[in-house]
Length: 330
Image (tube, rainbow, N blue to C red; front, side, top):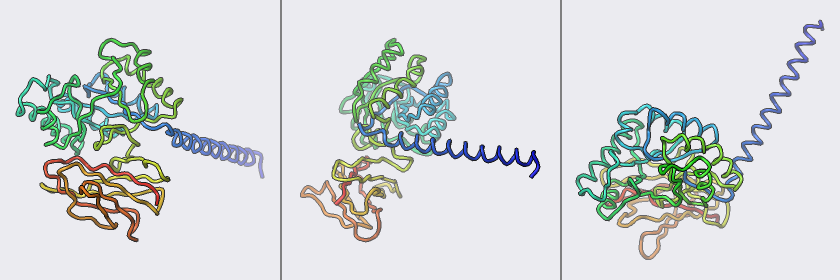
């Protein structure tokens, strides 16, 4: 072998070793991140976007720090910045409704509230192909009239457990400190447009990692932070009793009913619990053996030999909220 050929061969061998080491380190790092949610999940939320001046920077900061968040968009901002709404979706964020013009909704009548929420639903659906299922009332103000409209539109109201006070002039250190109070299932209020909030992202990520917490999605069933859905619909972690996860995927939808598919992972010996929101009713099920509680609102599903995915048809009766689904091993 000539010297140039020998040199090339040696360099090739060294490069292969380096690539192998890098790939191994990357996979090990991914495993560490995946296993680092033992303390649970929190909901990071950003209101008032999208904004041409800051949204792209915020999305880049969240992605580069391995965080996903829920973006509660103002409808008129979404209408005027549809490419940014799609960028939110493409960055893996969840998108919620924050009214069309950010008014004090509790001072409006039912028809005006309906317009504020419905127009925002339409603007976001126009941009992304999917209408939101979460709603953040402006100023956190709510009443029975607003809740009635939310229910008609199939929206789950999401307030917050921790207020970052970024809207009130809080500095980056104060915002990070506020996020440091988050516990499993809790939600923090932040906003899209502030430089201080953007600067806090890396420190928030580091703090969550140090406490074995992960940024999750907000469940449309409970309004609480749960494990991310991985793109396939809300996922609820098991309530105990073995390693099992239930993931919901939407199927066909009609004016009076809709289909859901539930996939169970982690065990082939599972028991799933499906809790409906009255006055919903289950019209049909498949690929499982169901049983019911005395009230007819809680269904227990067991395998019937058809695999680890079962389905159900729900008559919504005015309530479009998906049922909560959890599972345990039998």
